Image 1 (spheres, rainbow, N blue to C red):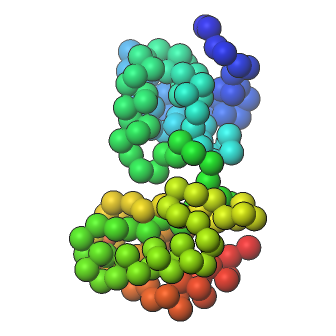
Image 2: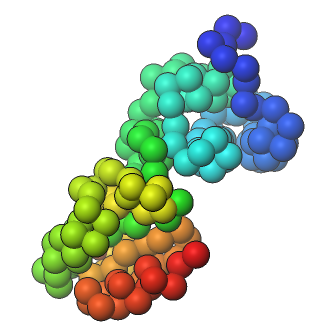
Image 3: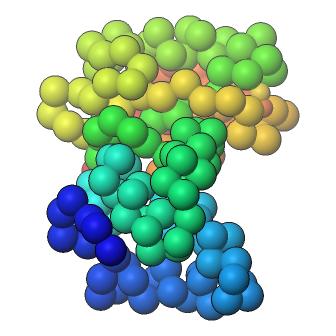
Length: 164
Ligand code: FES
């Protein structure tokens, strides 16, 4: 092992990752890469750094490039700091046709930030994402694990005002 910093894959993080690793044959530990990225992201302040991804690669005995590939392909992995509440607005076709651009603009004005940035108080960040599979409720957004559908500017405000 040749890590740049102390390993974060210890204690409960290691236990959680090991539970995923145990689901696969011994020579296919790398199948746990998505879960490992999620667990490390959740427990290390909400975004992944090259060092964290290297640690996962090392732990799962896979090339770092393969970990980076997964971590950059899926929009649920973050590579920049995020707010306490990550507001992900779908900007794929159904949502776009039903006003997602206006919702995003409303959020930009509300927080005085652009997608990819964090509000000054650290509470919110905005992200444009691809289809989240709730096209029937377009336009929609995801905050944490919750989907909010058929959004209007006022329903967005109501939802955000209700968050801690
Ligand atoms: S297009 Fe937005 S959820 Fe599918």
